[in-house]
Amino acid sequence: MRVAADGWLTEVQRCPSPNCDPRPDPEDVSLLVIHGISLPPGEFGGPAIEQLFTNCLDPQGHPYFRDIAGLRVSSHLLIRRDGALLQFVPFGERAWHAGESRFQGRAACNDFSIGIELEGTDDTPYSDPQYRALAAVIPLLQARYPGIERTHIVGHSEIAPGRKTDPGPAFDWGRLHRLLDA
Image (cartoon, rainbow, N blue to C red; front, side, top):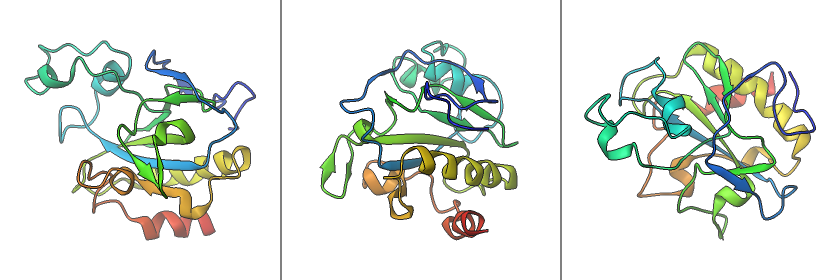
């Protein structure tokens, strides 16, 4: 697996999202944002995340979907519970994952970040395959975008405090760092 010139990972399933646009500066990528998502909340598997990110979520599919079906959101990558990767947006484009956000005094984090969603919840431990997949992808992204230093790998909660809590206390940052150091 590698980051191809077009910004897509090789050997990874693609599910292109319309919820993206050009970055102000495609080379200015210096932040990696880790998210947690499950749809419906607390349930894993199924197509709802892909449907949300591709504007195909049926508002009648679950009561929770009525409130979110109209959202226009995306992420660059999704890592399923089994470690499978699904890419929605090439890394050189701006995915709509961070919303109102700020990192080190800089607003509009979507402009300069890559968003990775982990299928999970704030209080459900993430899986071994997810940590392994994340630890495999991060060095590839850092090689392509050297501005993504270790201190620039953060949770959604860190760039949108008070608004977002993911990936939550169930995410083991120490474990991720140990895998990256191995």
